[in-house]
Length: 384
Image (tube, rainbow, N blue to C red; front, side):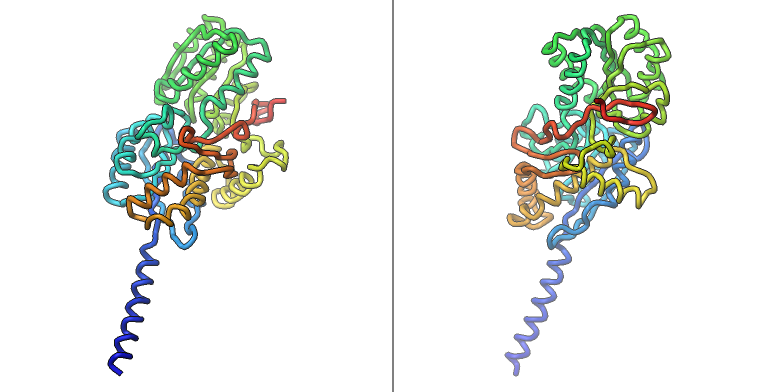
């Protein structure tokens, strides 16, 4: 009798223990976004998208801990350290801004935490090194977008361009990529200007660009600041074609720019022109689902920047089942295995394109991740 009682008690304790283990089997994902400040046009749809990310992956629950950095790189660092030291996160999604992301790479690398960065600049993953190996970029690398733009310039007879970009890693990397492609295509950059995300005017830069008389202008900015130099160029009488990067791929670009952004040429996500995309496109079904869910919750369609966070969730959903085979959430073994699993992503179809990640390429997009787009009658349209 006493032995039976002991066995029953042990069984009960074991069951309780399993229940506790199940409760503890939770992946903590930190999310940092710029819901306020200069990068808010990017950060708001990213913050909103967190509610659409998977809360259960296999037998694990996922907790998302979101913090607003107010577009301030210093606050980003504070938030990241808080998530690492106090919340003990297993992965990080964010931040929204390129300079913000560049400033926290060392912290996630030291902590051994994978970071999925929904930012524009490829500098977060290029050139690859021991720190950047912990970073995965959920947007198209600049080279993929820029190649489409420079191919179009060549086909339309552009020989000279003026460049105006942000005075941060986004603008600098775009100038680096543009310089190489311009040389390859026999195009000269005859004017090179910069402006800050927080500037209220780009008149001086626009005047210098107009005075140089380039055949076309390329603006390398992201979010609301994309419109500032564009309008300034139009107001100063510039008549040539103006190219924008995927950083302008948001409804606010149309709303803020109005008639002055008509004819803009950019390469960006299929989400901007969904009705014109063939059903055979592998990403269309997923992109439509994301847009529908976002509209159902918020009453309006998302900017593509939100989709970059949604794709981060898909990457984690694909990698976590592999990582948990080598360690439990909350351990360095799990986080290292998660990094390794993310790096082995193959043919993962997401909203923006198809991911094939390698040790050398932590973005993983190919040409399936872009469309050549223009602005016509106040709408984004495929450029045909």
